[in-house]
Amino acid sequence: MPLICDHQLPAGERCERPHNHLQPHSVLPNWNDLLQGGLNNEPKLRDKVKRSPTETAGKGGEWGFLQNKVSRASKVAIPLELYLQDNTLLTRPYDGGCLVYLTPAQFRSGVPTGLTLGRNSVVLYQRAHELDDYPPDSSWSIFELLDDQGFVVDKWGKAVSWRGHYYVRIKRGSNGWDYGGGQAKAIGIRQDEYCSRRDQRFIVGQIAYLAWSIPGTRIRLNQPDAPAYLVEYLKRHQMLDLDRMRGAGMLNSNGTAQCPFCRAPLSYEELIDQAPQQIGRQLASSNATALHMMHIEPLKMGQFNHRPYNLGLGHAKCNHAQGEDSIRRSVEFLFGRRLTAALDETDVSREVRDDVWHRAVD
Ligand SMILES: [Zn+2]
Ligand SMILES: [Zn+2]
Image 1 (cartoon, rainbow, N blue to C red):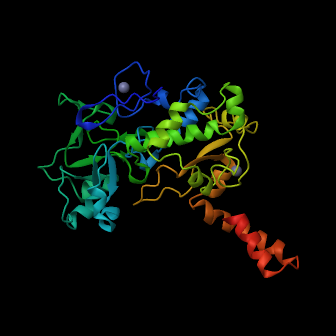
Image 2: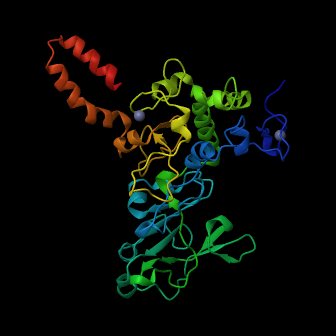
């Protein structure tokens, strides 16, 4: 019995949803297609496997002009400094397009070739004095989001396009944020958080596979194995290279999911239970569990590290310890000196020491 629909779509594509799906044919599976078997029934599981990999992280304060809690396939906002380092960032095939933002002072000192205000770039006002020092040109219009009927809307979720030359978001004491008369609450998402809609399917599929690779998940959800459709979909796109996942530390040699940082096997309880919080220090809004989504290579401006084979499930504690470095670098930093010191107290040979070191770190 075929597992994937394979109905012929226009443009030569085929439907990649499960063979018995109900709603329209699509080359992209629905989230529920990838979460079948019970991952979609438990809110915390769904949150962990689907929401974290597909939505941008929360931002506020001075970074509030970047959008939080929206699809990672949304329009990308690139700071001028980054564009100057790598102008190909502007021409990549983003699902939702991109734009470059520059400060009024940067604009005054000359717009680099390749950029046109209102077409692929905007001037971003973030300080009240900038409006006095470098007032917007009288020919400029404020940044606006438009829906498919051409009406101005306030959120990218409702918009299909944008227009305008400058964007204002200035803190006015206790009066909150002043948008200079504009309605748009953000100009785009941070570049390093971008992930195409297609890659999001692969990542959610891989995280779902990791969740199924925790023995407790299969016991609790009463499934003998990861759903056959999920496995078939990932394999069809070379997204289930188990050696590669073991190499990244997401799976151990038995095929059980493990924390890529400390290499301890993961449990179903850690996946869904509320992380313990100290009395008096609880965060009312926290629905964090003991496991986080972890990037093996961290997000980095100018790169696209929110990508398949780079996301695993690991301990919140280990995720914090990893910080901004790659897992490899963090482990070397945190444990390297302790390991060296411990080995110094033994009289093992250089060869054995090197072997121990590589087993611990590689
Ligand atoms: Zn179909
Ligand atoms: Zn860990």
